[in-house]
Length: 231
Length: 206
Image 1 (cartoon, each protein chain N blue to C red):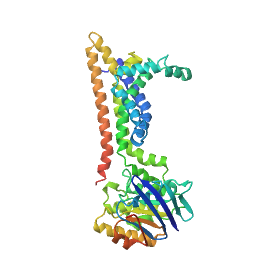
Image 2 (cartoon, chains in turn green, cyan):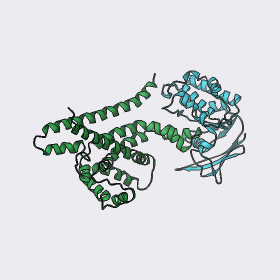
Image 3 (cartoon, rainbow over the protein chains, first blue to last red):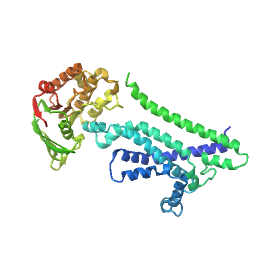
Image 4 (cartoon, chains in turn green, yellow):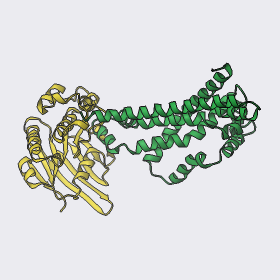
């Protein structure tokens, strides 16, 4: 059964995941758009930078976050002085770590769907009287929607599974930064913690499966609409 | 309304140039494939920027020294070779896309009038993917007409159709030419087609 402790861990994981994708979505979409549509010097470098969290050891990402956002770090000090925001050892810090780790996956998913959109449809919209922004809102954005949904689900699943960068940056504090994977890690260290590990692992499987099924459903739904046009 | 076009544009190795005036009726830009006819239409529509020259419709300059109107400000309707209907909108929403954006004072064709003119009233709830080539082309023409254009561009609108549909769409184009007051620039590489439809023929490239 779900104890209060277990619920706390799941709720925290969901909260971290939700904030992480909410933080990442606008940035990831902008990056996906730029990488899919623009040609400029330094594009390859930007592409590599976006993908860096995917290939870097997560511990290194966590350490870099510590250096930048820690109390002595340039960004961390600035955030605290101007906004009174402290990320280190807080759940918001866990969300930041998860957001950075989810970024490459989200960019990839959205970029693919943006690249699949026929650029000339926007041109058609412009000749019909739509300004650049209106054409984007009414043509490109709706056509990119399946990719955006897929990116959301993928990024969310990745976020609630984040371990290395999180534990390095915000440590493993029950009730504050201890998400599912961190709780599993802690339970493994405790003699007789196997029952807890099993329950947490099962919960992880359920959450991940639910995310996958949801993303599949969303993609099918948008494809289904296309299939129905055949009737 | 007189249309005055003099444009030049370098695209890779090719130099695309055209200089002509067009009056009412249907002016056919006639020439072999690859002569740059579509590029000329794109320049008129504002989708491709000429290196030099001018484009005028009556008193309005769409392009010229220091002037380069955005496509949405040109009032040039464009029927693309592939129709290019919005795949995520039903026929009704496709037709109304430009109509709703046009200031009411500029509109010269009503929605129901366009449906009757083109015989597409029964297609309103269909998705573009489910339309036959001829149906899609009629919807594309309707979408362009409803956006209140002062000039209509048709880019090989018969190219993707079978013989029966060609005749049907040709009849529609003839009726636009004869019954509506909008001048047409028509691109084609087919001599028979051009001879049947054109008020005037402008040879391009070769």
